[in-house]
Image (tube, rainbow, N blue to C red; front, top):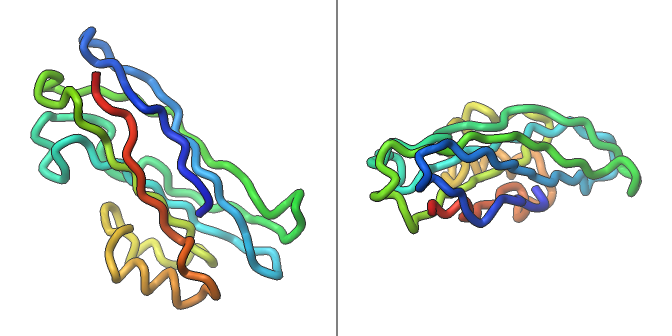
Length: 147
């Protein structure tokens, strides 16, 4: 997992959903063509209990890509257009969404890396067991601050 690109804010104060793109960059750093599972979860302001009734909430990308080993074929982007909204905009204002992404060599660890499990040691170990460099399998960032 190379990078997560997300907007810094979403404007919900007008009472309308805000559409924003989410882009993740995935790279094959191995010496052979690889199928890679790409999993991206969004945790809304307030965390797993979602006290402000915000969306999106949960897994927003669950796909596979096949990447080669040359500079022309070893990297790609995966994207989604997301609709942001909160039932309690006032409560969520000033808080951010958390974006968690994982790149899974062989696309065989969706069970241990289920929704909201990307930061867990179970997911880390599953991703690491078939990768020579497990340090870059997961990325977490904050974005989409509610305004």
